[in-house]
Amino acid sequence: MLRRHFSQLAALALVGGWNSLTVAAPKAVQALRLQRNGWVPNNPRLPVLVYPQAIAVQGSEPAALFERTFAANGWPPQWRYGVFDYHHYHTEGHEVLGVASGSARLMLGGPDGHVVPVRAGDVLLLPAGTGHCNLGSSDDFLVVGAYPPGQHADICRAAPTAAQQARIDGLPFPDSDPVQGAQGAVKQYWLSTRNT
Image (cartoon, rainbow, N blue to C red; front, side):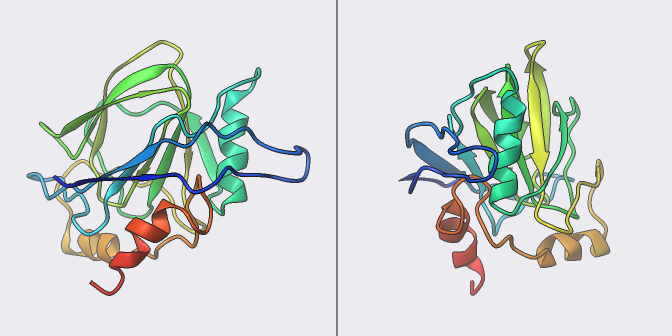
């Protein structure tokens, strides 16, 4: 598994209803490259991106901070919930998860995969095919989920069919990073793979 680090590029400013959105101080983004793991395809071409403390959680409606950030960067938010406590992956959408409150231990990559502790303010970007599962969470654990336009989450719990694998491999790249915008980590870690 390959890990890469880099500093976040800039704070996000929004207009319209809010003069600005408080983005946490820049921290290293972690890139985790996951290979196929039994029935879980993962996405060997696109790394998982982990943004520790990406959003400074504050106020009485912290989920709205994530929703506004994701929407401003072209990732329409679609739900507020937790993360399922069983291994699953998606074939029809790259998924961003913003931890609005609480904490959890997530396993990425399928059974015996990579354990990632998350807490309020963290963001994870899971390319299609990435296995994920909640190993345990606080009672107040709340996540905001978003996808690029036209994409969504299907719940897959078995090895992908040939058609599902083709969907994972051919799913369009988002135009913008859900946290950092056009010049963010997606450009560095995902768009650079288009010709490889």
